[in-house]
Image (cartoon, rainbow, N blue to C red; front, side, top):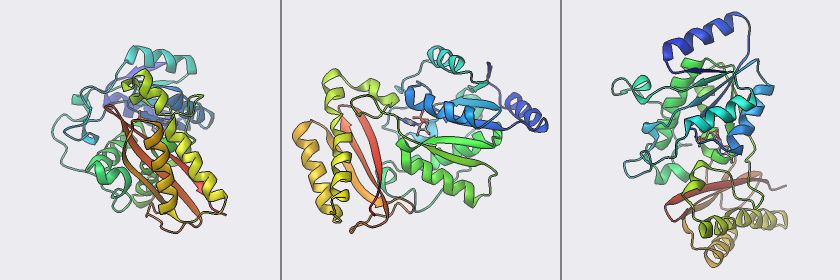
Length: 282
Ligand code: AMP
């Protein structure tokens, strides 16, 4: 296992690997790794010859009032976990290495970035698309794995890769959850014991929505109303949004048909948790 901190070195390694005909699998992360990240790494490893994981907390994707400075970091622990999994390279650049001067260029994926989290986090997905583009140009992967946990992000990256003709296959991997249903997230560290227990209501509400659809309900408003009721009666969570959108276009749907994504963001204390579920409505 090798830790690479410089862009020049990472590019040189990637060029050499490609020359040797090796398939490069890539998992971009912000570190503070959990089972969700590790599941992506396992997939990337299975599908490639050389597995690269990047760890970089990207300032561009945080709003001025968000948690960039307090975002949890623990490189030593991350390195241990990735070594145990047999990762070949950790790309671990400093902020100065990635942004030596103000970045005047950005990548914007319109429409898909405008709803859901994009509405409440202006500029977030532009920051994500820009850093992912930079990382793709540095790591030069053939395959990159993203989590369904951040469904909007994964769809945006897929569209960006298609629109800009990147030669990279994007894989969307399932959401990994704790036994109680809570989706693994680096931000779960912000939760106290009570909030952690209460936050299990998020997955319960998504399951309830799925059940309603499977039983024939097609009215999004009625489903969202029931989800809100469940969350507010069973927890102290403050709902940021709950939406039902088309799984491909992310456009809100009033009357459910085809494949939909039910997505939510809820605050528990200072933690803003997101989760979603995909449902085929028959
Ligand atoms: P992050 O470090 O939060 O930027 O996440 C890095 C990658 O891990 C992204 O592709 C996320 O979608 C993915 N990820 C985060 N949490 C989970 C989870 N619980 N299950 C699966 N993938 C996840």
